[in-house]
Amino acid sequence: MNTYTIDEVSEHNSKSDCWIVINRDVYDITDFISDHPGGSSILVTVAGTDATDFFNDLHRPDILEEYAEHYKIGCLS
Image (cartoon, rainbow, N blue to C red; front, side, top):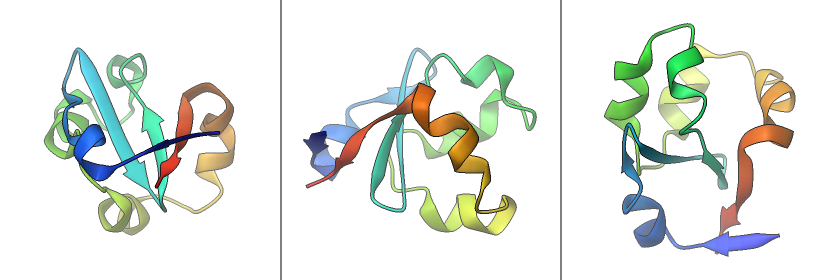
C-alpha cells in the first residue's frame, strides 16, 4: 500500500484534484465529488486535509467500506 505524508495530501486541494484523509487512510475523491449526495462544495472545503472529525460527525462508520475499494489510495506515513 502507498504511504503519503500530510504535506503530500495537502497538495491535492482542488475540485479537479482532491485527496482527503479519513482515519489515517488517504482517499482520492476527485471522481466522486460530482456524485457526493451532500454536494461538491463541502468536499472541496476539506480537500487536502485530514477530514476525519468532519467525516465521522456526519457519516456512519461502515460507509467507508462501500467506497474504499474505489477511492482509497494509501495511508498516512
